[in-house]
Length: 211
Image 1 (cartoon, rainbow, N blue to C red):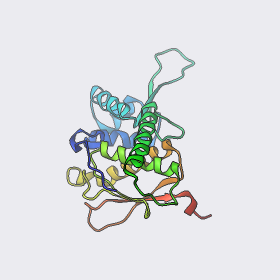
Image 2 (cartoon, rainbow, N blue to C red):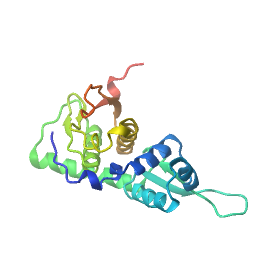
Image 3 (tube, rainbow, N blue to C red):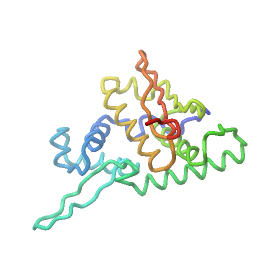
Image 4 (cartoon, one colour):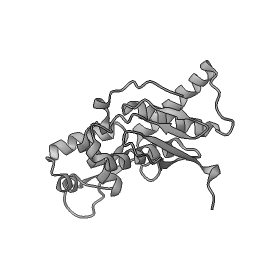
């Protein structure tokens, strides 16, 4: 199922490597402060605040005030929205709306889907596709093989020197979307390729896992 992207790479939240770096730090360690992010990145606090505001508005992170039992203003702590321990109301709304649009599209277009994919899995794919489109990708989904082909990668050339960090951040974002949507699918990883511009993400159905 190929879907045309409605967003541009330059507008997506992960188009800026500064935001990618900040998000990576928050994904690695939750409850980060602006001071910690400043020390790690060298960016001005106001610049960090602007990036954090964008990441919050896209549902990638959430902010909470520190609970203090001593004097002093509580700090604001930032954590990545993983759809589990830390949930974003924005991400939750996006996932719900994607499922509704997906159901409508399948009814109107009578799209055939594999029998093995239950409604929850289809809703996860709906959310995944819309998130990828928002990030400037043009994903091709193979529901039978459970692959997401993002080739050519919309960010491979622009951020080639930061590919490892970018891919790590992106896979975590997609897993967060799948978890928030709720269902049997999870990100299994990226298929290896000698061509750095080739990007195929492998999904895993819970029913296929083995102890």
